Length: 461
Image (cartoon, rainbow, N blue to C red; front, side, top):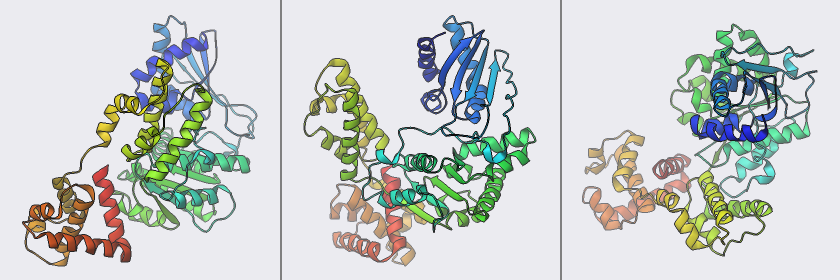
């Protein structure tokens, strides 16, 4: 079997197991060799090899059969990202019978030397590839400070924000920087889902002491998407004790989520309060300047690969203006343009962008309606729609009403009279007063500012 055969199998796997699973688990695999019916792959951690064996091993063997390859077993060998003190890599194998063989013993390994409990790091996610702007400058500065190593005044560091704003990029960048500066440190990055998987596996295999020893012996623990453990009581309990043990040892913890700790439903209060001990940083939605900077950086990277391609003036500005909600979508749009231009041998023009990205542009142009604004505001403040439209002027009703009017003016093209009419036939001067009032309160009251920002994000998502 050759790399070309593995390439064919990978293409099919992307369809059969889904794009997300493929990018997370299959794409990082490195084909090493195929000898005597055993196909060997390199992995960055034994956790990765074990996961692929259990979840996708049978499917990989099936694809090899379809390609006419005589492969009876899969073997996964750890190729660590950084120097480790183990004398030989751990390996995991899976056969056509579906039986996973026990890992080969690692010589002279101790819990503090074990490099295999984290998830693979993306080589693209480094600090030099992170574009800094006003919406993310605090998160970037805090991440840089942690990545320098040594004691910091904030522990844990909690990063939160919407999809595609750079949380995972910063987490990976911190890990890469720490490994470069201090290779002796045991830096572990994984998602909350993977933490839960390892916990369940330890319970099933009756290896809880090993689990506790591994996670409590790290120097830096990084857990991505912590909202995933909300509502999972046993996992939360173990996470709580792991958190406390590491804090007591003055080890650094870095957490990310899509919401602030106080806004994660189903998260135990004792965990919520501990996550708020250190520095909680919000990655705000990108502004036009930051999106344009990201696109310009991507163009420089692509030009190294597609030197003959040209992009006309105005295309990047058009994309930065029209695709505003998600940086991943923005970067994906540029990737599509470069791929298309390379295939057809054409210059990237504004007309090409409008034509080839029509589906993305339509999705980005989703209009927020008045009904959505009123419904979301009522849900957020726990008031009834009938009260919002009523003449009632008590503060617990008036403030949500003013907020809804402010959002309507910000997110729709409706005029003051049109908004007033929709809110119980109120005069346009009432709407003007409400908009001014919220603007004033945002500058004076951090809670009002946070409410306004969160509601805006919820409506634009």
